[in-house]
Length: 351
Image (tube, rainbow, N blue to C red):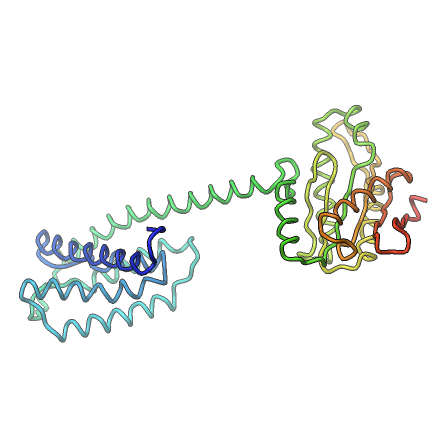
């Protein structure tokens, strides 16, 4: 259906709906002696797609009246009243029904039972109050419970499928150890930024100092535990007062990348410098109880100074290595647009 013209697709769907509605009227009339459950598909449509709900709702009384015409029980007044009633009911549903899946099934169930009981049709041209007996109401109520059970299975499967897709999407975009965005997502975001030609970004590369020595002394399990701790501290510190302008990625190993939007490079430099000071003061405690003073080095570049966001990332990486060469535990800013190709701003504590 996705490959055909939209007009044909809608016509085919409408045809299938009309056939099903006619079948519902036929089968219920010939099995229980009256027409019921005719709005089941319309209500389900309302829960799934508001776009087609009113159309299916209006076509339901039209099809039912077509069936009544074929069995010789059609009345124009009933046709008009049923169409008006549909408009009223669906407008009322739209007023109180939200899109939260948590309550969808409950409201679907209540709406199905209420409308099914109210729209029991004796399929006769003359109205009689004696038609509405307890036995008939009970039949419709039990039928609604059966429909609700199958609907519950259907809705639950949809919800589980959505959750599985969300989990897979999360796993595809996030680093398993730290929970940060991974290198794959980093490249995807760089492509998006490059295509939009938006250069209002800063790129920052961070690398833990002497991490290999830490791993050799305490083991890789402790190293992974420290990486988790570092990632959490970095995200919390960088996002403080920056809201959603900061995105942190695990670039690989002990190296991390940060993309910062709408922030002056001087402010970002100060914030990274403060983070390094904070990291050195906030000693890491190993499982064995030993406290370690750790640090990291960082390089920053301003994408507005470069031809592309990719060039800015490479410049930030060059600045990171420059920080390593200058003694580690510091921040270096690399802007080729400045008078000096590499301007090093070193924290007082590093000096």
